[in-house]
Amino acid sequence: MHHQPDPAMQECIETCLDCAQICRETAMQHCLEAGGRHVEPDHFRLMLACATICSAAAEIMMTGAPQHRAVCRACVEICEACASSCETIGDMPECVAICRDCAQSCRTMAA
Image (cartoon, rainbow, N blue to C red):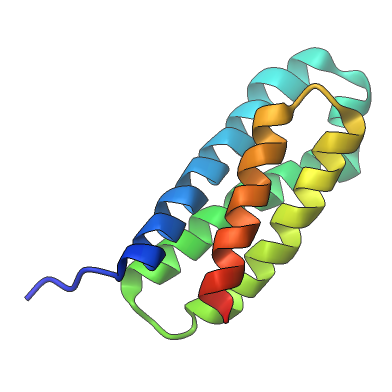
């Protein structure tokens, strides 16, 4: 029998996957092209860490394991840091928005 996650979890999974994709694409397509502050090591690593934790959070939620709460807490922290970094550097509104959405969704799942 196939188990479907509840609607809030399913929405969080989708938001995490979107965030992972947008952070990775922004890092690789926008930041590398823009250069300067966009490729400073701390910022660039944070964007890739955000993509990685969002993918991991989605995968763990898909398993149905109760440990998803711990991963979601880490996802909140990294998404908030990534949103702040992207906002400070500027010119990445889509990344800022999806990171904030993902942090909020994961905050709900971590509770």
